[in-house]
Length: 230
Image 1 (cartoon, rainbow, N blue to C red):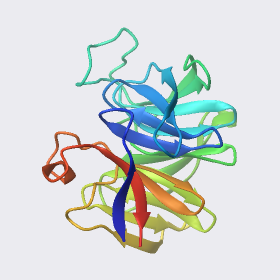
Image 2: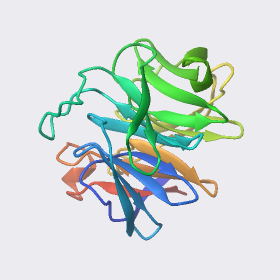
Image 3: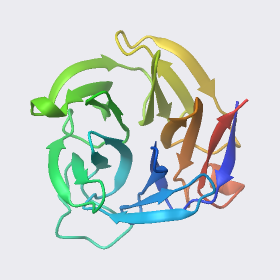
Image 4: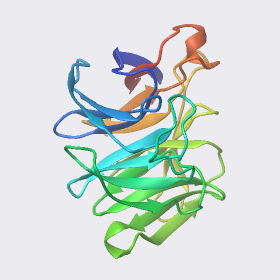
């Protein structure tokens, strides 16, 4: 499997991805804006958010949900920065904050994914994937532990959930009940390093926010949005 660039990113640090019927929602870790683009990369609209050091993104229940790490090193500090890990519930059109809740482990956050009224969330302490119920005061209803570090983008499929582990540059499909590994995609050293993850028409799309980092930028010098292909 290979990571193949498909479009020019609309921003410098495309961290989180979410495909919807409207287009691809892209969380920019640098500005904390959300860009909605089509399959050619054309920007359809921009959503300004209160997110800080944004990572994961998902859409569900009529709202936009963003993973916020609380403090950004890539833009000036804002009055809305909290210094804490939150998931924000935002107006899907305006980006205005409707609600927010703390991360399940109280720390930083990368991946989130809507799933039939609930939200999957990655965590670092412990290394786990949690499922919370927004309709019940964001109660944790399920979790499973994982072994690999740096959990990042999530993509729910019928027989499990894919999770990108960025440092190892692998994408693992987990059984959502037991956490058992069902499949694994290992990318080559010269591939993009997967941060954001989403799925469209059965194909995994990735965002590489490693601009200025040590991985794919050594060869391309640019962030990427693309597909995982055979």
